[in-house]
Image (tube, rainbow, N blue to C red; front, side):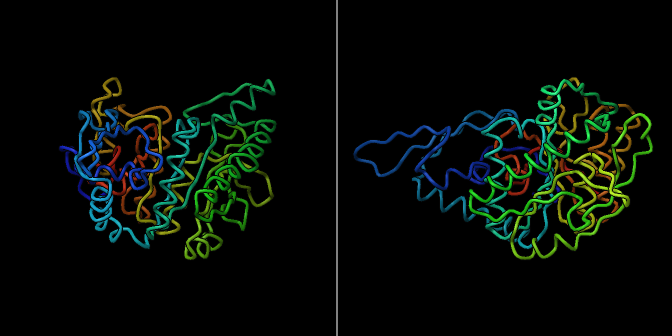
Length: 346
């Protein structure tokens, strides 16, 4: 996505980049084909998501070959712009619960890697953690968008994030054709944690004390996709649960990333939390801080916004909060002018 975000216009073939399955017509998804015996062309009808731009379905009369070539041609400027650049993606929320959305995120990451971008995936696992806690009859409690983590909960968090969610994502990415490497903050001393200032209320919830990206750099340089669980330890070896948004922001800064992208369960940042149509397409740090002061941002969105602001202050060029409920929102954000949520600039 360009630094200045354009207002949504009529859909062009560029927007079909958000549906990379169009590049392979063997197994079309959400497409309707019709043809006549005398015509070599296929009529391709693809409904775009009203969750993103509210536009009606659009029909293209390009042949499959023509459409494929046009999509690839129009993607060239974006590939040239971001080729060799590091993109840190935080993955969580609805995109983790839906098999279709999970597959969409994996395909997007693999495609970006294949065309020369350097994606790094940081994940949470809230739904999975809640499920296991419920099975063990351990109550889940949150304060200011952060999970209250006692010793028993910390064991579950480590088990689920490092042992289950992380390895599942690595397996899916590898199966899709890329090479993923699973890590936690403890591996290679990637992250060193410290207790949260509110440790008395939050328990083993930590902050990032330091980042050593040296374990990641050879992986990224060689075209691998690091998949990082948001668990780290302090200097004494005590494990801490760290907010995945925070981890993504600190890693983006340490890696000198071009973009930080947070997948969420909302369309982005809303000017009016009660109005889903009040999406803020682009805003700078000053405007973001003003919205916080005015109480327009609250709950679980606060740590997301704060980590974006912090990463931008440390040199990340742009940070985006996008709608993870929409398939291929990751490609929309990177490969189109319109984007898929709110872009925050320095």
